[in-house]
Image 1 (cartoon, helix red, strand yellow):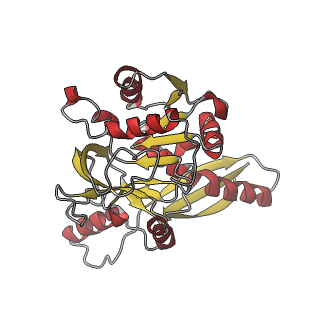
Image 2 (cartoon, rainbow over the protein chains, first blue to last red):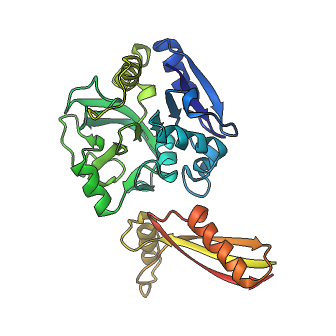
Image 3 (cartoon, rainbow over the protein chains, first blue to last red):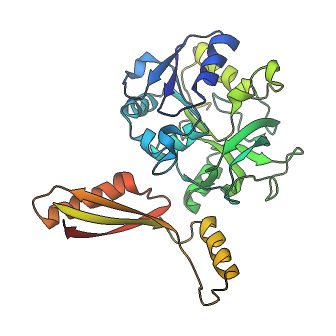
Length: 239
Length: 82
């Protein structure tokens, strides 16, 4: 498999993602600069990393979503290649229209830098196959604009089609107002598109991917997608 | 040359906690007459166009493609010769 980590101006999660693939999973990975373009067949997996790309100017992810490399990312997504957006990468996916909805400023107007609990709602995706349905995991959140918003019809579709992948919860798995750090509708922390080949999530699995950092709850996202791609499975109806 | 004064603001029904916080501060300052506050963004855009109708068309496209996010925001603009 071949993995690309996109570097936007101001990305800060790029080297963490690169490290996960190169040093933890020992998989080929390369950086692609936001002014470059590539062909859909060049990569199996494309990571849009976290960090305030382009200074979060205009709206978080708005300028990155309109950069040259995103035309290639959109083409790759259409060709059923896999795209994973983390933090700001999730915001870029929303701004680019690869995922439905938008983000607003957190309900308390604060930047949240803390560990959060998530419930894995959907394990029937190439990104979450190694988790157990309903599993409670702990990941690091670092965002000011993490308050997921969408029209009620969109929310209804996401629920009906089982496209909500991660929800904010407490350590016992309860999803409620208190366990929702950002104010996201339906406690949404991560969603997939209709074909389940594009995942966006606000918390940072790459920062919770090795023992040295004291938390490995995030590594299964990367292991799942690598396993899916290397398993030679075509992207079928199972996801 | 035309100048477009563009205003972008949240759609009705979209939570804007910043407005609430500002409204609270206004009340704390004693402005009891102030009932509501909405926040938004403002852009001055200079457009090189042959006539006003063309400038309007460009400004509309600009607002829809870049300056606003149609999921959460509405926009309006005034166009004048500059």
